[in-house]
Length: 327
Ligand SMILES: Nc1ncnc2c1ncn2[C@@H]1O[C@H](COP(=O)(O)OP(=O)(O)OP(=O)(O)O)[C@@H](O)[C@H]1O
Ligand SMILES: [Mg+2]
Image (cartoon, rainbow, N blue to C red; front, side):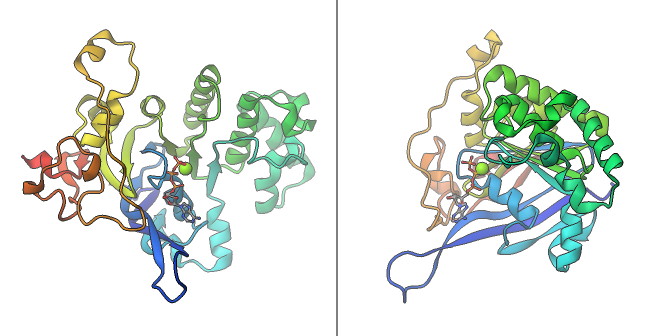
């Protein structure tokens, strides 16, 4: 097998929290807890999970925009975390982000043209003419009109602003594009346009995406493989077909049961699973499975409350972390 574009091994991120008396030992939010995955060139890997499950933190740690506690991240086989400052700056340009809220992630004082060209200015000594040509090409590729180059972010609609965000992310032809909830702030009709645009651009420029979303409907449309996260852990990892056809983890099953479907047969087959209970306190992770407190199939006799279950193989392209799977 080829070296993956990105490989993440046993990534852990903890945030110190000040609480209580100063002489008490520091407490930590275990935001990402022993996460491993890889991404092949040209594919889209989805990270799904509810709010606070550690998706954004994983993405930021991968690009070393925040420090990790433990773990190894390799881009093209090179250890990203061991690079010196200048090499890191250059390598980091290979990873670009598209954020959820295109308004707050675009500088309101710069024109669209200036925003989009920024990554190229930082990287290469291009002439004015070359820079202008690159901007023209990318404006065309993302469906913006040439005369919109001189406008400021507030003069665009939400969908158009996201097109600017996408243009900025891909103008320097990065190897990995991290899309963090890229359509969550948009209304449904515009969501579909932006998702289709991302797919077209992927084919055209052979892009690789790490695609973060809490919406399984969106993930189903976009991703080749999917990692389901719960409280900082990957609980299920699978190719799209298997995940949607035979989800193994009770959490994935609950998430999937909430996805609206136009397929009557599927609606009849899949009963909506409503989860009760609260997730555990991220400051004091429980010793067993993090999902146990809300799991409809929790069973003390098989170890659910003792130790977090390891990822078990369901098939060549499908793994699940659940003791119930082996039963
Ligand atoms: N800078 C920080 N300091 C302290 N805790 C943080 C920080 N950033 C994130 N966290 C905590 O880490 C955990 C994971 O947060 P993260 O933002 O990665 O979740 P997420 O899956 O991206 O959620 P969402 O869907 O809401 O964007 C949460 O418990 C969050 O409160
Ligand atoms: Mg997030």
